[in-house]
Length: 108
Image (tube, rainbow, N blue to C red; front, side, top):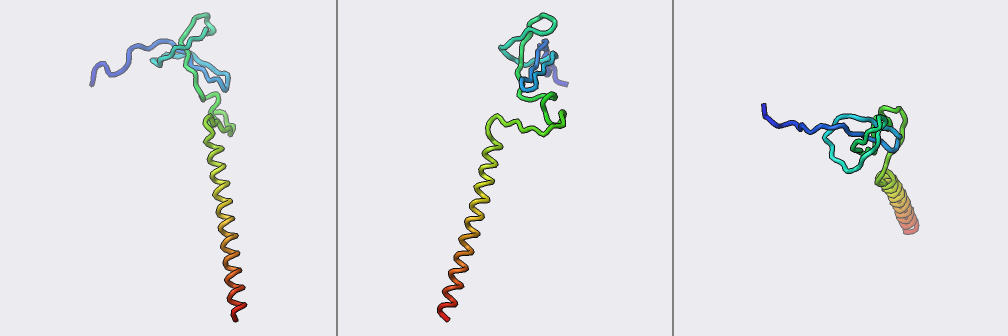
C-alpha cells in the first residue's frame, strides 16, 4: 500500500448550509479563510454550503428547485421557443398546402 496517501491535517471545521440555517461541526481538511464562533464558545473555520441534507429535496421530501445560475429559466425559455417555432412551421405548412389546393382547383 502507498504511504502518505491520505491527508493527516484533519481539524475541526464547521459546515454551514445558509439556505436551511443548518450547521454542523466535523473533522475535515477543507481549506477556508472564514471563521465562526460555535456553540461551545470556540472559533472554528467555516465552509459555506449551497445545499446539504437539511435542504436537499431527497432528504426533505419537498420538491424545491435550487437554481443559482438561471439554468431552469433558460431551459424553460428554450422549450417555449421550440414549441412556438414548431407551431409557426405547422401553420406555415397548412397555409402552403391550402394555397396549393386553391391553385390546383382554380386551374381545373
